Image (cartoon, rainbow, N blue to C red; front, side):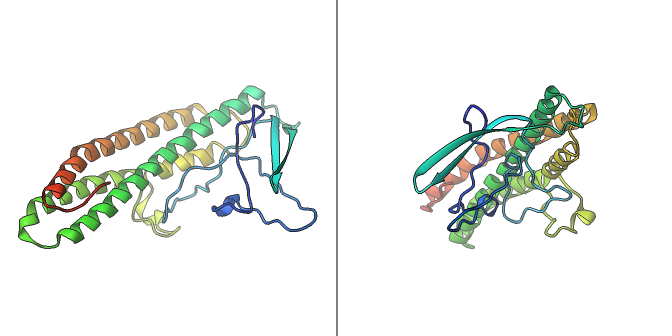
Length: 240
């Protein structure tokens, strides 16, 4: 936890995500925190090039740790010290941390857009199966096709959907979410303030992500209600 008690990460023998799991056994135990905040949100099948999902390192300063065993809690404070060989100031550490958190959060926003978009496409696929090939449903099938095409365009602008393995980016390149994730890696390779160029790239890529997410919202708003109404008129249940 941070010094004010805000949770940074939680590890548990009951955690669902592998990265947050710990193994416990009777007797003494040892756990080492890597001093990093959580990385960005991911989705199934996501392949990024040169971008391991590592959250920003905690800045030097005071923190807390809480251990809960069988309902009993123990809390203790501790301090992360900077490498004494570094000339990096507290302000430098904080500036880097704030930059990396902004990038991490924007990658998460982009990936959440993909998750939402794919859920809608999945529901549209279910709806198409229910409608079948009956000619009387052609108007609705055309509306679904148009919606799917708009979703596919936005999806491919945010994420490189052709990348299925770690070698694929060499052939197909990377898109906005991966470009931001790689910027996060590049600007975390030392203990220094974000560079001017890094800040410019972050701003440009973040704006591009925001534009695509705005398009996504608009196309959902412009199509989903219409298709829901058409489905209702035809007696087909479809609610996203």
